[in-house]
Amino acid sequence: GKLDLDAPVWNYCKAFPPKKWALTSRHLLAHLGGIRHYGGANAEAELFSTKHYKTIAESLEVFKNDPLTFEPGTDYFYSTYGYNTLGCVIEGASGASYMEYLRENVFKPAGMLNTRDDNPFAIVPNRAAGYVVNEQGELQNSRHIDMSNRLPAGGFLTTAEDLALFASAVMEHKLVSQKTLEQMLTPQKTKAGKTLDYGLGWGLFPGEDWYGEKEAFHGGQSPQVSNVLYMLPAKRFAVAIQTNLEGVPERTGFAAQIAKIVLDLGK
Image (cartoon, rainbow, N blue to C red; front, side, top):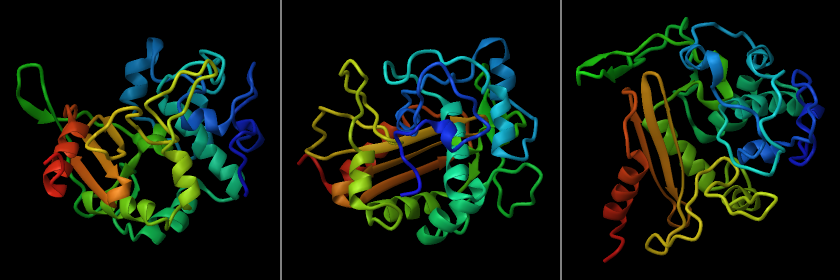
């Protein structure tokens, strides 16, 4: 009850200035907010950022004064920076720092003992190095980056086992209620009524019958890593894939095929 998803985000995130149109957490959760993604003249510098930001509010400086690219609710545009802003909203609504809130309300309840912020200066046991395949097809080390410029959007270190524990906690309603999860897994719509293949924080395939099962997933890739978490909530089944390689394609489809084989679907 501390956060109204339909209230302007600047009610909670004081570091993000009011814009021309009302912008809500619900807009940002569904990538309907119009906050830009990496782009423009500084796209590469932002993607491969090496600057260390000490706070979420500080990381908003990169984009917070830019105008929205469209009226919120009218179009879908995937935005890492939209989720940065949501991290600031969590801090304002909870009164805790973003990482403190996640540790107490997500990581601990789910039993995720090996998940933390990806701080390049921290000594982290068993931290895997990241790799990339260059244009000549050769494996080489990835570029050094500092993920503090996008922590809420994906700047974490974790393991496949911790991702599986997270999926279990989500599906067993240890983190959010069944009612909230149903909202998260409901395809969102634009103001014009166009149905999206995205809910609130989860990718979906609305209107498609995948062996009669409802799918939910989210992939992620950045310099050094590629991953995906894939769930069939009604089956209480999930596939977590983590790789320390950039640009691995077709991860969601691969996870779905694993689910098909393990659950003996389609026979």
